[in-house]
Amino acid sequence: MSTINSPTKGRAHLAGDAPRILVIQAPYYRNVVEGMRLGAMAVFQDLKAEVETVDVAGGFELPAALRMAMKARRRWDGYLLLGCVVKGETDHYTFICDAICKGVMDLAVENGAPIGFGLLTVDSLAQAEARSRPDRMNKGIEAAHALVAQIALARGWGLA
Image 1: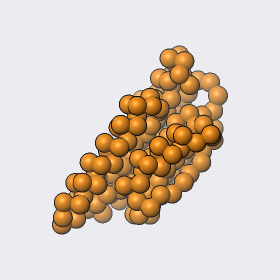
Image 2: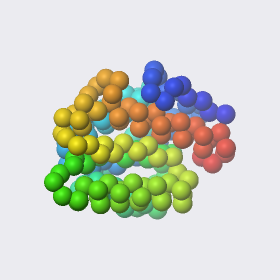
Image 3: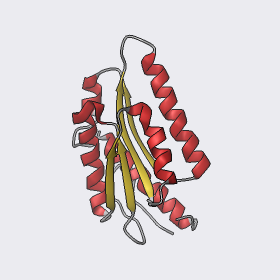
């Protein structure tokens, strides 16, 4: 069975071949998303993973891009989604966050694909920046570790 260390600490370990990972990111808040991506890349570097990155217009487009990737001829061992939605003065934030989360969850359940979900849903840009710094709070690192754990689970059950 594939193993990995603690989801938020240390180096990632994954038995078997280096994973192929697709990062789908919505860089509307470019510095925030880039900080999370760099954190995740450090995790993937430990695994010598083959990583491709694509940009989408915004968080709302993440589930559709994930679905397209799952239908593509190219196959990845897992998918990492990165984005950030900052609360504003209207209900738009709630509708967008709910739609993204439901869309991603529906795809995860339907397809059983390993997915790391790094979508920040925050009240302020300062909160997002705090969660994208290169330290223990980096949510890109956490999402990457979660993805690696899902890939290990899929491999352990003979699904990947």
